[in-house]
Length: 610
Image 1 (cartoon, rainbow, N blue to C red):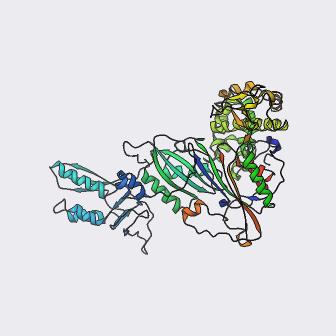
Image 2 (cartoon, rainbow, N blue to C red):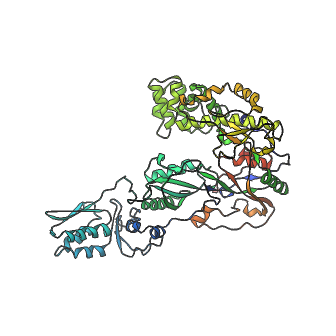
Image 3 (cartoon, one colour):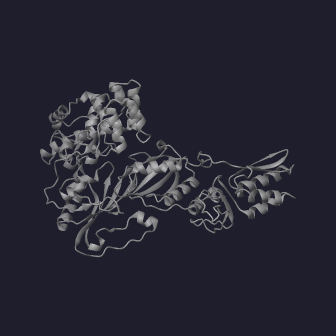
């Protein structure tokens, strides 16, 4: 069972308007999110990457891109042998490739017999030897190298030959010795090419995805790019259920590799597309964005005019800035806030049980088997049953087998997971205090804390006194995400003490989180969140469009799929566009808009568009 709103402190509404219903995220195209970069007012747009466009800006990449598509699978002939030759006049990106070429997938090799004939002119009497070597390369028994027994004493002549080989025979090394010039086929390497000297280290690009969350998308890309995930950075984390455009960054990604990854994504029909390649001096990090622009469809709206009025109010007054249900996981008993409280208290047993022995609704059958073995005390068998996908469980079980016990076992839980848990308990405390504060009324009070406009990091707050109460608005109220360096507002001191007592926590426990390897400072968060550029457009659609897209999304455009405008009918719908700054849960805006539960299952239909 998933956590409920009342369990995580989500109780109040900002307005008292009538409620209405609607279906959210019926199809992926009903939920479009575009990141708005830091320092910008415009959302990201997806522009397809082309080799020709890159070469126009950076001519130094012209030669490497003359040899793209060198590892495409070759169709088989009737005799079972791969064809040796292919003719192409364009590479799909508008980059000219006019010669007939031969591709050898086993070695990253590409050459044309026209260039082989030209190469033979350097060596008098060696034409048969050279052409025979290249013509025989498709045979498995072909030699790995070719010695051309012609000695050039003129260094400039040798230089011309080596330059010709580098420019026209991709996948070969060449060397000169006393016997002549030798060509050697390069073997494949897992090493990634580096950028040319003098280029900025960081490669920024835009990721367009549909029906896949950011973590799984980046894992897919890391495998294709042959890099560890720690080198892959994103500015924001996006949900699975929708079409999203977001900024990504890797270090020293070669554009030819980038181009080949794009081809692989298309060939494997992955729901990911990449574009907008640029070279920058700085990387990006989570949170390095202004916010997001949303374009959503609500289907089967019960009261269209009520929805429109509610949208106007939310656009004017904002909504309660609760942390949404997705912050707290999908297990009511072992939700992330309770795990965070256990981390803060040093209760390793509760955290470890949740990960290696307590069955979770989202567990796979194999993970359930692993947890059952742990529950029976069969740790060796559990380790054997847990494959590499269950890295967290393997780490912890390994710690148990090594003899670790008590709080020291928390060190075997990934630091990112421990941090997530502590953030969740901070979120729960914030939510409960927000509900308490709103129950006191919607006017400023002496003892409130408000946002300090001079601190854009939200690490400082101003206390309301009788002298300055007229200088601030109720909408400026902040409440701490409790941790080191922050304080509770005086007006909520008693309520805060009650909340901590109910959770069996104390203020001192938050002042030494480094003992569990978590380095988190406190901060302040607005109670009321502003919505920017809210617009609500009502329309209808017919029965024939019940299972069809009602708006064209960027992914549909990127793959060139056809979109048909919906025809009017008996079904009411609304198209909402708005912007939210970073760190805000859009589900809390929908909750205020519909004046109903934020549990998506209460307003969600299909989650895919197959």
